[in-house]
Image (cartoon, rainbow, N blue to C red; front, side, top):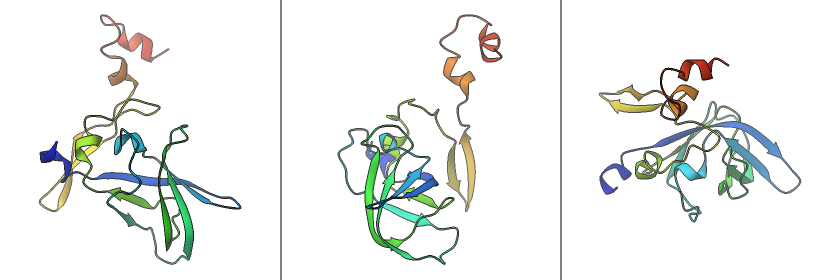
Length: 148
């Protein structure tokens, strides 16, 4: 765990933002279960990649994952540039959790990239229903089930 914990980042994208009377909820395509399987942390090493920086400072933003679980709220960002759809949140030093403890809950495993010699190389394709069921169905009937 200590060998692969620090060099791996988990990259998420903001897919929706909802403002209420009390909070600004920022929904991402990532989930807390991928970086904090025990769901106990309240702070993460992270950075932002904004589409543009022409935006206002928000007093409070609640960063959330995509699941339907109430505790899929990762953290609260205070007094920071507002996050918008398409912005990236990059969680750093999380490889030990993202690669081996992420459950197949609502979404399949994502693409995995290696950053080497100043470029990204895809080392694992995102899962599809085919990879999910290939070990669950006997014989050659997998394509039969996928195509129905």
